[in-house]
Length: 221
Image 1: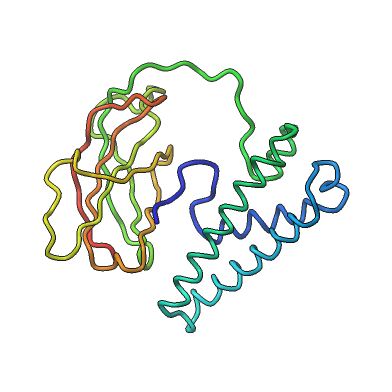
Image 2: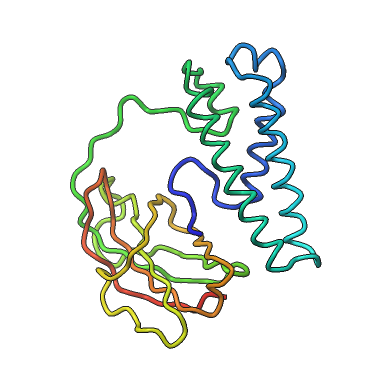
């Protein structure tokens, strides 16, 4: 599972912390003011509790392939509920900037700074983070890193099984996510351990992409 590409936190523990904060904020008066039904809030609490408990098991000596899959399913449900809450309650009616910051969001900038086409080239250096996780450090190969057009990154990747045909061109990479971080994490599925991840980066700005960076590969731990 690759990291999410928008407002969602990168790591599962960060998701747990965010929802825990939401639950603390959404006292009865706030729920009423924001039009959140009690049933929906109760469901959020239940999904959060299940995900929190399974994450603790997955990080303990109880971990097994079954618990790992249950944990994945629990967090899929948690992410879906978080997206639902944001779309249906946190943005309708629009909250004030202070509310958005309190919920862990970045207030919308109504006056974005215009920038041009991306021209820089970047690559990644990989490092180990944990089981099924590869850290990536984005490094500029050419171009001006201070140019606002060169500040976003489209990270492309593909997992190749042991003995499989290696990737020979970045254009063969099939999955991607967008990030503005120069240091990030790609989280793979449990069964991807031991396989090879091929990765390449394109600078991206407003949907416009720059040249491909070099193709790199790493063994998924």
